[in-house]
Length: 317
Image (cartoon, rainbow, N blue to C red; front, side, top):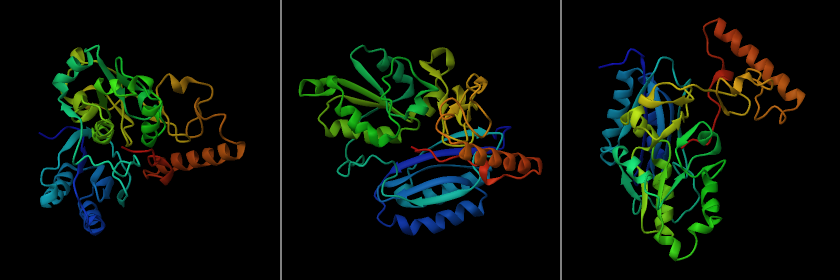
């Protein structure tokens, strides 16, 4: 049954050998545009990754187009609904990796950690012998994570290998017997991070199947060990249990997700600055940002979407 909110969002990824990925770009872009679907899809030799949104019929049509390729016939996706368009444009991009880690010898198609379904995740987290690692970036972890998870405080996913190198409890032959559980937003980063741990010789490596989004979709709040909201890479900014729209908006200057409390700071100026960036912008930069915000508000008053209102680029999963 279609939701009362009209925009269907589909988050998807699949590691699969696509040597002709560049040839898929134009027809996939055309299919999305013909069906009024917007968002970002990444294509690489190693597979496909991205999030798209639009009318339900349009999303279904794009998914059918992808599934028609035998290599993508088993492509899975996660759905959620939004009352407003989560994206303002459609981009199909060609990349070296569908999620960047820069470990060329890594192949998630060959070796990954053991999948743990959301229903079994709480029991794994309750095991005192398991090291639980949040593989997401600092701005994502800041607004929500699983109780007891280790925060690497990384700014981009490519910093994770170096962080792992610095953890004394994960070094040496004896450490390779350590049980390690990893999680991320939709599961794709954990495909590579758990593959990395397996490549380094760790025996018991687990990751949350479907990521945080699947957990929030399936696990009711009263049974949940999740605390806060989950950052998403679209105009919703964050989601909560049941994948309802969360309680954050982006600072349009530095792209940090802001809560209502964050916006009470004297350093917060809509479209210009927040606590995280107010001292990192020159007066000239702040003046330009203020003018951009003024143009955004004028466009909104005309019922239009200004380019300055689009989602700033983050290191997407």
